[in-house]
Length: 352
Image 1 (cartoon, one colour):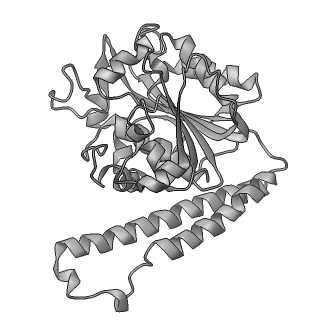
Image 2 (cartoon, helix red, strand yellow):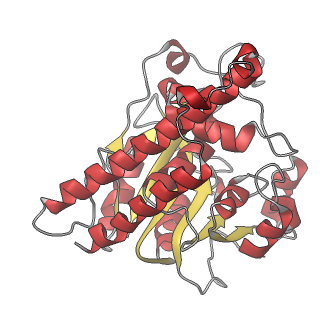
Image 3 (cartoon, helix red, strand yellow):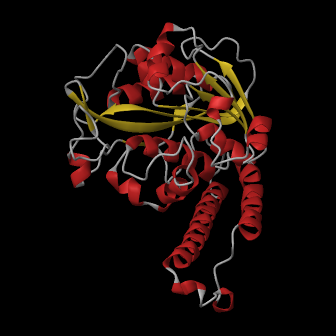
């Protein structure tokens, strides 16, 4: 019942957002026939309709979850999340053609600016959009929430979450840490609050008001004393030196969550073997058995992973994979060769 009390106001609030901030479905009287003579104006009208339909669909899914909980005899630490698009799951080609992917592509990548990426089938985009969707459809993107990001680099998620009103603490390695050097050379390291601002997503004043930055080592989380509604990281924990270090981080970072909070992380996943993999080094690759082990360890501490779906997909672009040097093979960068292994991205969600 406590979960129902938490979720029900979100429906009302989100419905108001739809009515106030998104144009209603165009009725015949709202269309200006002269505007429809141009492809550009037609496209804008279709985007309005598409976004509104997507908002309504997600509200319906949240309502379905509440209805399901009404029929349960007691609250569960691990709710049935079949009504959600994002679970613990592997990146697949089909996800790039979903309403949720299109929605976040509009909000993150197509606005222009230095941090915007071109529209393409790239697993890094999938990671960002899946994290955002997982938070949004569970009601964690609003002004009542506090989020903590690890190894944020120059990703746009801090700006995105702040644009929804979230108070954000963004963290990255200290510039003087030797492990930060590789990320600095590829322009993927954050050393200040200013470097995190995505001007095409949020105004500078709003960003500076809602986002803070501090250095943090994912191997040693001392210095972070607050509790958060959610924590996140995007393809960072596989760079901590070993499979075990990444699992330890996932568990330890979850201890920074408030009761009922969630942790959302993406990492490398081995789609070709549940045995041979990269166990240690600067880039490891998690297997199905490793993610299941994480779930076992979490459950011993009263936490768990959300429902797991390890299917890697069966489409042409799921069976083909990019090879070094990347982006010139002609294959989409959804699956790729890492050493002697075939990998892609996995998102996993932790419930406390």
